[in-house]
Amino acid sequence: MDYPDPEAVLRINEFGRRIYPQFLGKNFTTETKNAFLPDKIEVDFKDGRDSSVETFSYFNDQTNLQRSSTKLPKHIMHLFDETLFTDQDKEDERILITNIMDDRMFTLCWYGNNQISRELKTNNSDLKNYAYAKSEWWYKYIFCDKDWPSCQNEYLLQDSLEAHTYARWASYGTYFGITRETFMLLTSDISQLTNFKAPPLYDHLRTIYFQIVVLCLISRSSLLRFSGEVARLGDLANHHKLSEKQFFKPIEKLYENYIEFINKIHFREVTAQIQGIELYKMLYKHMDIKEQVSDLDKELDELHRFVSLRREKARSEDAQTLNWIAALFLPITVVSGLLGINYSGGGHLMEHLKDQCLCLFGQ
Image 1 (cartoon, rainbow, N blue to C red):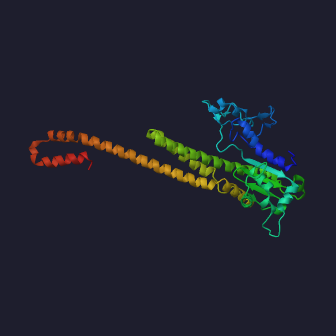
Image 2: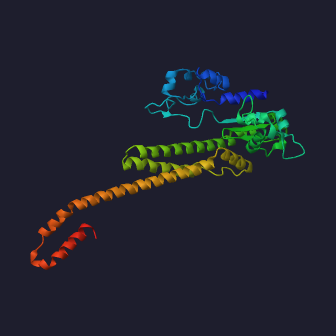
Image 3: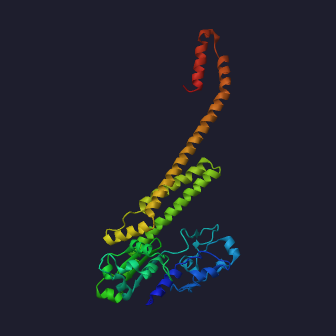
């Protein structure tokens, strides 16, 4: 689509990524829409079906909110076959789709604008100080702010822009902006990119970079899911009486899934291309995936220690029970042994009692 107005691009990104209201006021979504929630989102998927229109009216009904505080919008559910998927927690064979992270979709955007591209690459005598590092519009574009930057500290804004901007091609007017919620690209328009024989970065964003983002999102959502499962199992163990089979089997399954995740999904490098490696590392860093993996390892280790302690406690209790049983039957065993003694060998009475005791205690 052709949107020459930079402010229109900011509004599209901010409004279009909303999945459900971030908060509700006294008048439900009225206050939310006055802040950042769109009045409606309408998408025509060109698939022969009617356009999908979401007005977020579900959240204006108190009865709906009591049943479920979140609901996926129609333009997302439109992508899935309703006979196979559902966003309602019902007991049927359909797959339940629900949000894991927050109220916003991850945003990928390419914007070709010659004027802004030129403005961001201007610099003063200090070659390290490009204009993008102080650009409020560039900050709003990266962080999906539509009206003003969500950082009102000049020094913090500059530090944030330098940390979240991939500026390898700054002199060409090409910039990548990467956060935990966005992967943004700004270049010259298509005609100028073609004239300079630049690679089709807008296609790269929809293919290879899209796949990198999906991989990182899968890693992030999986880690959140694993962490939630560890917390759930810990809560079950602490507050509910479960049999050993009920408790240990889910934990073994959790470990199996985690090992599979580490081997098949969690990659430290996904391409041999230098730019791809650097972009992946930036996305990996800003999503805090490394820290989350480390934290999850600690959580799993603590869970393992808890399971080991519980097993030791169970074994100790079993041993104590056996000791009580042994103590209970000890007099009976001794009496039975005495009654069965052949007194013709009276000199061997003490030796016989000793043998009986040794047999009883397994020594």
